[in-house]
Length: 229
Length: 136
Image 1: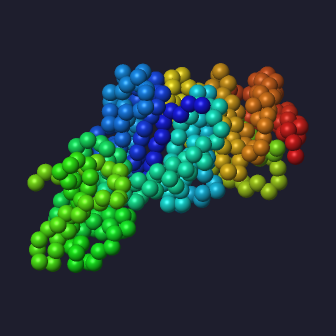
Image 2: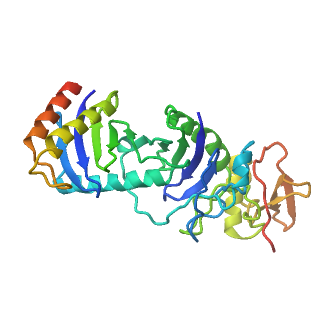
Image 3: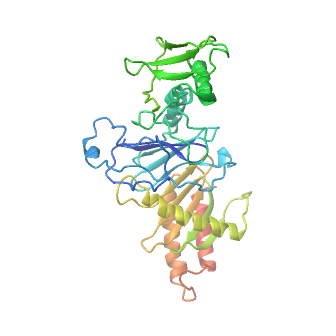
């Protein structure tokens, strides 16, 4: 069985994640503004052991057409779950929150909806939904970003300013199971410590000093590029 | 193993034949069927263009929770669409029989104009027989 690609679309029908394998055909790059930033593309994430793809990976990305009308009211039981052509099969799993997981495979594959559900329930919920550093839901159209926070130089985190940082830190604390009072997490940020990729939670004490508390026990699955001052 | 309906779509995407089989199937208006046929025509073209490998055909089977759509496109670009229950096993061979009936009862009819809606009673009779043989 061959898997060709995985797409994840959010409830606005925008692509928030894309990855391909075994593709021999070069896809057209998206038009300007047609793709969110931080959507994984071939240049950013290298598939495992795919030399042939590597040679022609430049400009590989899927095309997203913004503003396509789509019936968000479509009843789940009336949706299609797969289609097949002579060379590939398209599998669709839609979550109750209207996220769409799409996988392309060879035409002889059995239904992959179970696999797509596993991807949703496992890695997606674990590493994206519970990851406060991936902000794929909020923002206006055109400003929302994808879920690939490995994309180099594209992700920035406000270090210690404003409500956004506070909100992020709060959800980060929730996700990590850390309890803090509202006074403590006022104007918080998240920063990378000197050692590399380990994250610290920056706390501002009531007397104005700052402390950085590393998440020693918490496995953090993201790499962070701090925003430039 | 139930056939719910059959469409024939000409090479321009126009619906030239549409019948529902089986009792209790919700009817759409004829205009809605025309829109659906045109949409399927477009989807067929899109699915061959977005293929991850070169030289893909258009969509051949669409599966949903409650029905299955099997699409057979002839070399001349006419699409035969069979809407059936999910467990329909021999949908391709049924479409092949429908194509034969089309060749016999429509193409050999001297009063039929190409690309126009099919109003041949002989074709209807052959279709009823094929669908009846396909299952309840």
